[in-house]
Length: 141
Image (cartoon, helix red, strand yellow):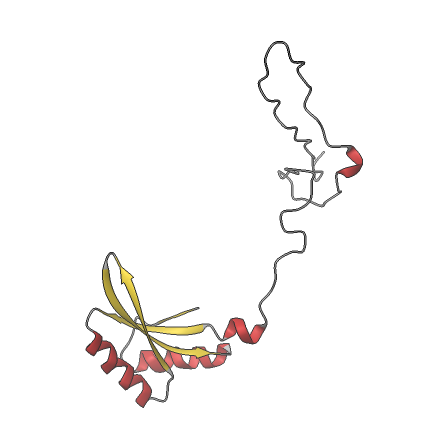
């Protein structure tokens, strides 16, 4: 029927045994153990035991997650160039962080404006950096 979902009873594959040992049938989960879920068409229950994360995912508080927002302004191979760019951004009133990253065996200095706790501050910083000549600046966590 359209709009209905099917539930599969997944059985464990029996192990290969010697001829003298009795071969057991796969054990099926009892139907009472299968929870009724509203799944989209085309999805099926993969297992009937407990969920992998029975407590669900833990959400980070809004202020903490938002504090990880930055504007990536530029990446330099020469540290002095990164420091010069950072000084220019500080003069514009932006908080600045220089992060060192190893890419394909070579060290680079990534200039980041931030962190920003709220999206409006992040977007203002993005506009400010682009007006300052960093047209390729983008937001990141």
